[in-house]
Length: 618
Image 1 (cartoon, rainbow, N blue to C red):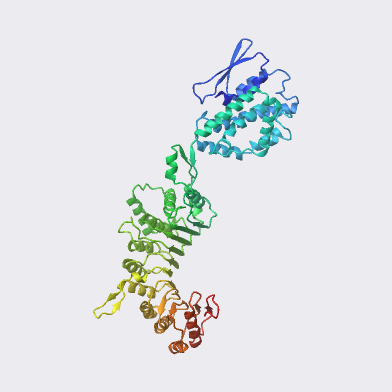
Image 2 (cartoon, rainbow, N blue to C red):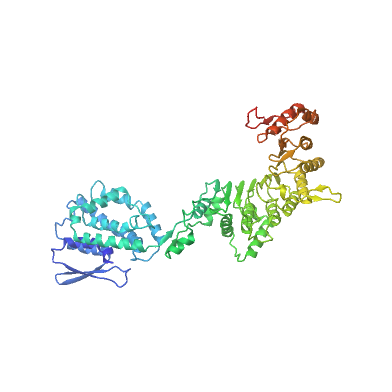
């Protein structure tokens, strides 16, 4: 305790060793209480407590002409200002930081960090010491250390217990001018011969090392904490993409293993206030969660929890149970209250990819959508709801109605389920068909790589004729007849001739009901045989609203495309296409369309894309 509070006094007492002054130190029982210095002179005892009070008392005892008192008036004035600086700023800061660190004062790590931030950003600390007290001189006292240097330098050496030399927890840094000042002070010949200084340096080094060895291991903010801080505290943030952080196996130990290794843990958290989150979420235009299995950076559930905190901050309501919370959300949805208090008012694009969907995650996603009245694009790509451990009642059958319900108030919506398992089951096919038949907000739908035709059960009627299940047929009909749907992607689904013909027939039947399909992507689907391919293409090209087509692939096995077959099937056929995309087509398909275009009436065609292959390959 005495070494912590009495270093300046020890150095000053070294100069009073010939003055017949005796002293003793009375240690307090409470280590947080400063010790008392009892000074004996001329048979009288004077008790003094407190660093600066002791210094002031010893200053009065210094003999006339002591080198601790500057000779020049200007330097004496700086010396006095230095003592005031130590008394009013430096030692109170020392008490709040190093005193807490070494168990001499009450407080916690958060208080230390706050004090360090205040001290390092204040104009009355480092700048004042550098410009007003030191100036162009080596020391506060001019060319040699004065009593103020003893006090100020000792305080900064106390504070070194908060630097990276002695701690893993704090990061107090001394600016270069201050660091050089301390080096000059410690290298001064008179200081090196000072017995009090030598005692202090030995004791402080041991003490600082002991404190370092016993300090808590800090679990610093995780990547999730940092991502959450970035999303919810940056009002100028427009686009936010959350990805998966992959570490080499064994590079980073599991958190449970860290906890097993030590019981002395201190978790550092980043505080985000609802007002900060409300301001930041209001400007966000794009939000993407890319999990690649599990989003271990920032989950949709955590965003949902933060949004709930913002909603409750705006309208404080005691919602204690899950049932009450859901009832409150449903009430807001029915009354339109969400739109008036939406948090994501600028969000136009939302993407969730490569994630296993749980009930909590799906509910969080729908909550985000409900708070985004300007949302125009939702991409749910490579997501799965068919994982072990989920409730039996949780599937696309229950998920799709909830999604379409929260999207009902949106306009001109683009929706993508690419590579998701939405169509793996009959129930999913039936539910999507039902939702599409009741939907009037969807203008673009991507179902690429969602259907595995080998999973479909081919049925036989009484006459032995094979047919597809009603669920997939109802889905094809719903896709072809939705009056608002303009862009449809059915790529890489293994669609057959029968399904495409059924789709085209349903679309033609919708003509009188203002069918609106403008763009169709069938790339990656393969039709075997020239006759089948011609049937499919003539049926699809008959759709009056279709203007942009990416056709399926033609497979003739090892045969070649015969010009006569193509001409006979399409000669003088009226083609309304404006754009034809063959960029992903095989040579047989490209050759087929090369002949077809020259034999059809294609007066509206303005763009034709070929693959990046050589003419010889084609």
